[in-house]
Length: 309
Ligand SMILES: CNc1ncnc2c1ncn2[C@@H]1O[C@H](COP(=O)(O)O)[C@@H](O)[C@H]1O
Figure 1 (tube, rainbow, N blue to C red):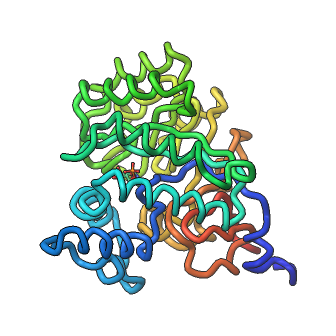
Figure 2: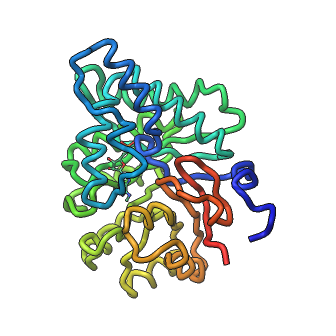
């Protein structure tokens, strides 16, 4: 590693982030502040302090990772005020980490105090009124969760179509890869495509979501980009290469969530880079030791990262 490639260098480097889950980008400190505020309004709120529930000593894997959102963070961030507070904090964090172009993705959700439409509208308003919008260009991708029903998936696409003029650029498929039947989303993605929205899909994250029928079905949605692409059989790899699909490789997330074996240096990113497919290096989990990375520097999310040496 060159002497000048340190945390300060990488932080200052202008970066692009294309694979950031909004709720996954909220720091424990920000969630702690939200909890404090909510407890002052409602002392009966019993949720554990995020600084304990998400302490640095805890490690996450594919089994413990998804319930953290659905059973904990979503409950904490269920009011318009908490959505505004956390979205503004996330935008500020990305800007401070040197990100200049961001495609933030999020799954529309409702609560007793907001509809899914309110949720999307609130986030777009935060993006639009951000004091940093001149230095950080941000667009929104709406996510379909694998647990969604076909009707819920269509609702996401309808919201994406409605808010396209306000900055929604695409539709994503995400969520626990061990859940759901992706073939039920065919119509929803078809409609998204018809309306000119781009499509990005979480793809082959674990072996259970990497069967040939599942991956062929996903490719039939005509995606523009694929995320993770870990357990990809050779025939599917060929098709991806022929179609030159954009690949979002999430190295630190894959290593830390143990989606791949080994460490950063063992990551499969080089095998994709060799195919000539457009590759963007992303991550959705902070890197413990930024100096191990050639280019990194985002606190929560790194667009980038090649192992050094
Ligand atoms: C291994 N990486 C991953 N694979 C698949 N889905 C993931 C993910 N990391 C996060 N999410 C999805 O993003 C949601 C939180 O952000 P939003 O509420 O949408 O902003 C999670 O509930 C999960 O569905």
